Length: 475
Image (cartoon, rainbow, N blue to C red; front, side, top):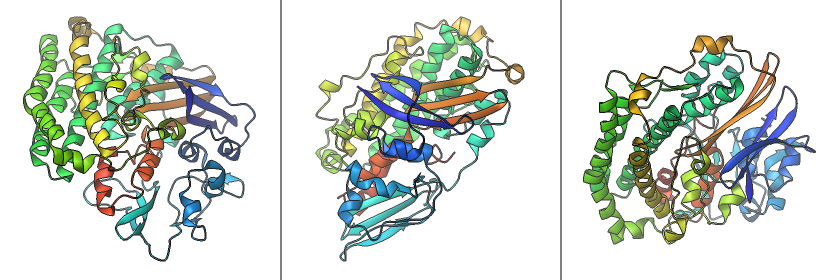
């Protein structure tokens, strides 16, 4: 079975392409017979959030106040088509004003776009009855940085540094994605050592985020032993990233043709540093995670909270940990050249813990940390660190600037910590058009579904259990 996980409309050629995920392998194909966003909307095999992100246009305020709440809440595709188009154009998902239907006993209120702390801006429109969320509508688009337009015009040598800023907590993931795009365009080869090391960097990025998220969820439910150790010892993963790359977030390391490593340390020290991360996790963090997993109060707080139906992962195109917490095995690492001997999770053994609720999203993070640590340990012996530390095979930005790509369409995909990332570029002589789809794009709808009929006070917990990227959407 395949799902349609992305749609690219090149405005230069007026061609449509879609991305098909079949058994965790993505291919890109032209789409015949469709001439507009409405044609895609009428085809129920395309998830609506992906379409509105990819093909949506600015067509003003969304006013659904005269609809019945039942019609607004339905997931029946044929009944909700009118919500997503106006005058034959598909709506985008940016906020332009939003009015939702309410019963006489309910009230509506907005959260955002300005939030407490440093969280990015987003508009959350709740309709609440008593303390129960009847529905949540999420709209983004408050801080678009013009990245797509920038990439259409800048030299190719600047592509990867810009890509690393798309979503700062996924710097490695986006650097690999765009390095591969350029490698495909210019037939640039990458050594086995560098390819495998890219996978290690991606897993260290995943571990760092997952540890932080476990701590954040523990804090939200008042379980401070786990919060405290995650807040401090997340630094072990960030420290390993800094030891290997010179940056705690891995910036400046992955580049077309290979990697740039931190040569201020020896290859022996670099290899040994990986063992320290596993040691700290096993000694300090894992005992507190296991203690939390065995506490009945933690289970009671998280189980059946924010449940997304497990059969909706393919229907709505949910990705990454969000989908895997629903028992979906989709994971591009199973067929990735950077992941030799990758061992997928045994979903059939964990089906009781992966039912699409907040508990599943908490528990999956622990499973994935274990999985990543095991992969790092196994792969260390397969990389010639001495040769890797002596390599200087990356293509310089100046050389990339001087390369001329052949006209055509190129794409790249990569399983970052939030899920698979996609990018594509169509080159027509000197003209370019680009597409970027962050893993968060379809998963925002999963959050909308998760909080229906939940207590309004549980929204922060559920939001943290997803940890989606606003900036990965606002390009």
